[in-house]
Every structure is written in structure tokens, then in C-alpha cells.
Length: 266
Length: 215
Image (cartoon, rainbow over all chains, first blue to last red; front, side, top):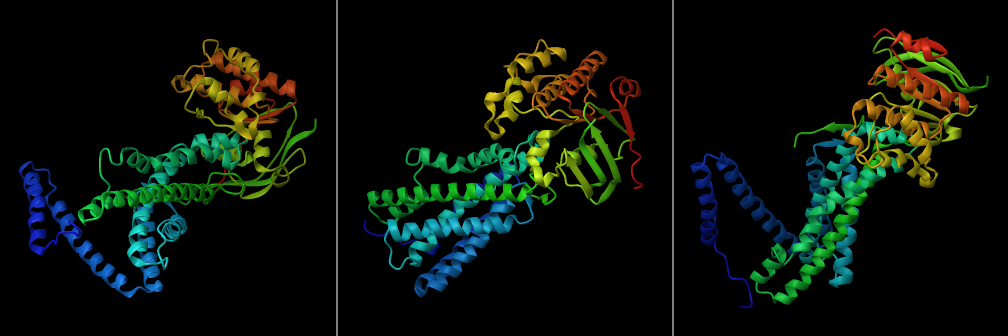
């Protein structure tokens, strides 16, 4: 087989029977998941079809400003999603999340397209957009987990942080163990997936390439690049956001300043 | 006696509310001064402000003639050390809790293990071992552990928020005697929030009564 088998709309309808079966089981067991499953399925179809049309348009254009425009929309959406997941947030979190994802996402994607894959031009939509998407998807998870951990440590452990400051610690000395713990937490998903990749699951991109008819070894090479790219970007993003947040939440007088932190509904 | 701490026209706030204004204080070497007043008059906020864990709303502070900007905020807190009423105990052992502040500025080798042991014994904590989990100590034991952790840092000004609130009378007396001994030995000073008039008269040189601001 050299190419992907065509999937018609009838095939998609058949695939939807699988979700329907899950819905029926949910109703039978009174799990109350029917409506959410239906909504999730409809959203999946609508969102992916829309993305399909957008990608068709962007790939067809080939202009750098169309690609970068779409990248900007993706970064804004990822930055927003990243700060909405933690149970708390703070004023200025979106700005910090946006800049972190902008810098790490673009730096790593451009490095991969130009240096590793050698795409010309570097903004070739077929490479740039999916790679950036994978980086942002994983990066926002790292940022969310890192921020959640840092804010919990600082708010719930406020008396401990202030005890450190009261005994002469600088703001960095007081923040450091909390930042370290936040970065560790943010990196758990990517490190876990790197540890078991190929043993427990075949990554989605690699599976997609193989299903689309690519040589498995080519798909593996791409997947290794992708895993390293995601690990690098997620690490830099998580470290970046936790350092920026710590800088925001401590004053230059080495005081903990939590007035700008507030709870949010998950 | 020379002044260690000079406070002029200080105002302190909790959020938008001014709890205290035009507060003046000269704290001389060798003094233990009691801070008293009804709840909500700003005693804790005053101590936190003197430790610069929050900025004053107005007024000036000087430690031995230097203001916080000249001295640097972490250095100020090293000299004027605040110990909260609810003891701040870090996850880990008694030893890890006692040595933790010595890690700041890389001073771990200066931790005075023998002195810490002697102080723990003086505070009737002979049974506590360094490798014991500090989280599992009683609140009263944790309160004394937190005080020892402060004392071995040799601050010039102790800012103590109800240091005997969780202690039985014998332990409270032992703690007061230890603080007095350390103040005399090192020519330091202490500002202490306390409520018990009998205890206050026993170990404090003078009393400041805070009346607070109308809400």
C-alpha cells in the first residue's frame, strides 16, 4: 500500500456507530454521560471539519502572512487554554502564557523546520502548522500543570513561604523549591510518554503516517524528532512560565504578593 | 542604651483599611517590650510590617541608623526576625527545619548544632531527636522548635507573635527565660505580642498598648 485508503462520509457515519454504542452503554448504566458524549462527538466533527477547510485554505495560499496569522490564532487559543485549567490564576497570567508559548513555540518549530527537516521556505504550512500545533498542545499542558502547582504551593503554603522570607531568604531562595516542584510536575506527562512510547502506545502522528501509507522507519524518525521537539518546548515553556509567575508574585522588596491571585472555576 | 530599631510615624494597613497610624517606637538593646491590645488592632500586622513582610503605608523604619533600602530587605529580616504565632514547620525532619535558613546565602556549615540541642533541652524538648518528623510534633513542640530556629540565627531584634500561646505554664516560663537570656547575652531586643498580664509583667520591661483605629 502506498497511500491512505479513502474514507467516505458513509465510513465516517459507520465510525460514529462506535460512539453511539458508548452512548447506549452510558444510558443503560445511567452514567449521565449521553448528552456530554453527544456534544463532544458533534464538536469533534464540526471542529475538525472546520480545521480541515482552514488547513486546505492555508496550505493552498502558501503566503508567510497567512501561516503566521494562523500561528498567532493558535498561540492565543493555547495561551488562553493554559491559564484556564489551573484552579487559580493571577492578573497578567495570559500575557505571560502568551509570550512563553510564542517564544518557545516559534523558536522550536523554526529550528525543526529549518535545521532538522530542512524545509524551504521555513514557514511551509504543511510542516509549520502541524508541528506548532503539537508543540502548543503539549506546551499548554506543561504550563497549566506548572502554574497549578506553583500557585497552590504559594497560596496554600503562604505561611511557609513568608517564614522563609522572615528568616532572611531572598525572593528567589523562597521561590526556588516551589518553582522546582512546579517544573517537575509540568514535565511529568511528556517524560511519561517518552518513557513508554512505542511500548505501550504508538503516538498519534506516527500512527497517522503509517495509516497514510508512509514507511514505518520514516514515520519513526519523524516521531523521534517530534518527541524531542515537544520535550524541549514543553520544558522551556514550563520553566519560563513558572519563573515569570514567581517574578510576578514576589515584589522587588522580597515580599510575597498574592493580591493579584484569584480562584477560578475549572 | 543605644537604639536598635527606630520607628517614626508608622502607618500599617490590612488591605485598604488603616489599622494603625502615627506609631512611634524606640527599641533599645537589652529590652523586651510587650505589645498588647484587643484583637484587630493591628498587632500582628505591625510586627509583619516591622519585619517588612509588607510595606508600611507611611512612616520610616531604621535599624541601627540604616533604612531598609540601605540595608537590603533580606538583610533587614535577618536582623529583625519575625516568628509567627502559628509555627511554620517545613516538611521534613527536625534537623532539616533547623538547618533550612542556613541554606540561604550558602551558610549551611555555620549551623550551630550543639547550641540548637542545648536550646531544645532548655525548652523541655529533650525527647525530640534531630531525625524525627517535624510534622508529627504537637503544636506546642512546633512552636518551640520554630523559636529555636529563629534564635540560632542570632537576630538583633526578635519580633515574636504570641510565642507562648500553645504552651503549658512550665514550657512558657522556660521559653521566656531563654529569650531573656539570649537578649541579655547578645545585647539584642524583642517586641512580643502577649495577652497574659501576669506573664507580661514577669518578663517584659515595658508595655505598649495598641488601641487601633475606628473601623
